Length: 250
Ligand code: UDP
Image (spheres, rainbow, N blue to C red):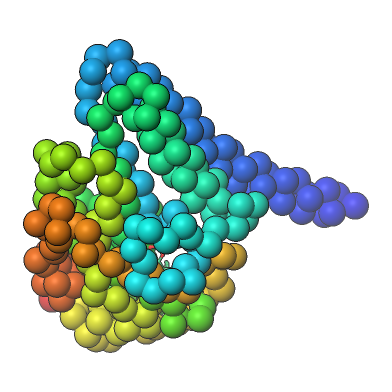
């Protein structure tokens, strides 16, 4: 009985943690955006929403352009983020139409680079940290899911151009170079630690199966396209991670 209670309490505690993270995520996206829009209205500022490719959910259109409305599960474990950002975009356009606020919306695709939180759980930071620490690279199943990774300096350049230009967006900012997670793991292994193992682990529900930005709009309206290829960006991130983890190259 006490075992049952302990187990049950553990489950409830975990659910509580997940639920509170989700509540914080949705509160930040909805109440945070409302607060910032109120401030922008009061002081007459131009405001940028860093939205996300997650608004496309598990996309049925590939690559994704900005006219696609997405395929999002509204009650899933990821929906606090996906739907939160979708509501944030709605709020931006409502304030723009009703109060004439100057808005800019970027839909950011997966971004990586130096100074990223080492243990934040995202795939590029996980694989690089694991390769440096000689730990197996954890490919979440099935491993055939794809992402397109944009180096941070390209992302910042795109955001500045959007903010300084005349278009509200939404505009996709991302690198169209698309990789499966198995390909990413193989690349990290080859470039950082050829001895490291690659293992498969369980995934979370509703993981998008494919993701790649159509950046026609960014090219035409912002004169922007990414310059840094994945194979050039990974070593720059590796240098930074090695310094912070404290394991130099052999
Ligand atoms: N992923 C993985 N191993 C990890 C972390 C993530 O294979 O250690 C996969 C995850 O299942 C997803 C992809 O990498 O398919 C990108 O995950 P991430 O959390 O970096 O970004 P997002 O899912 O938000 O695009």
